[in-house]
Length: 98
Length: 314
Ligand code: FES
Ligand SMILES: [Fe+2]
Image (tube, rainbow over all chains, first blue to last red):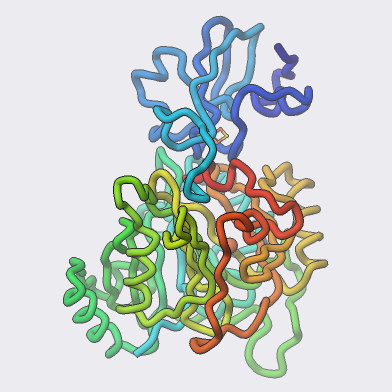
């Protein structure tokens, strides 16, 4: 749970409260790590990369947290991971970078 | 025939106005051209050719292509032949297909990244000119970057499936384009997997770099600054402009560069890179970083790879 001003995107709000939970990356809607699903509440969004949020996903409440501004209390679940391959759990890297 | 330097990079942006504000007011570049499709062309004050960055409106972030300037028009014919002989499809484009540029070659690196080679680009001159120049011009904005210095491309690396696009792209750059290896990271149980490389075609520690990741992509493009104090000031400019900084001023062990990693408003990573590090030479012994000291190679002070380095890119 964290407090987020209406003029802050969800990642900035989380960071300002010293909280963690949603993976934080580029803060530009380009890298996809901060992908979440909004379960409850009203939001406004800025343009975000289609590569990470398809039209269908968007209709189902999936957004990038760094492009999303709360307009009410929000409940969300984290989908994105600090790994480009979202199917693979984040484990210790076996080969330096991967 | 030889490759002279990185010529330009074509970056996809989600919001052109925000992107222009970033590249002009934060990085300190100037708009020099706009084409019929609305692509924006920018240059840094210390560059003499027409542009080094092309911004293209898109619904995804990332890189469309990276271009290198070669020594002569005839070199294009030679490269066309040697690229084709290497087994890579190469297309020759007429002058003007790339705006303000002579004929060019288009092909994909073994890693999948699109590359262009050209020999001529419209000349503009630097902002201080070439006759009795002052060391820097008045009226610079933001960080006032000097020139586009290099790019780092993420290449698929999956040793268990025997996929190593870092090694493949590196071999191509050396065997076909005449680059030489300056530094590398070797990983795996036997330390025989080439997981990252820094290559030069000039005398700087790198003109291009490749790092292994889960999927290919664009990691960053870097702009040159003179000194450590310029880097500090650039970081101030970024905070003032609420730019998302990934890694605050620090030194890279690899190349010895002074760096800041930060993001443009579409999430494409930029870097300000200062210091010449050392004089790179083809006969200088290749520097090798081992897996256990990899963190120090990338970030010399923290000696740790941050999670974003390998996960956050476009
Ligand atoms: S942090 Fe990169 S898309 Fe949100
Ligand atoms: Fe770099």
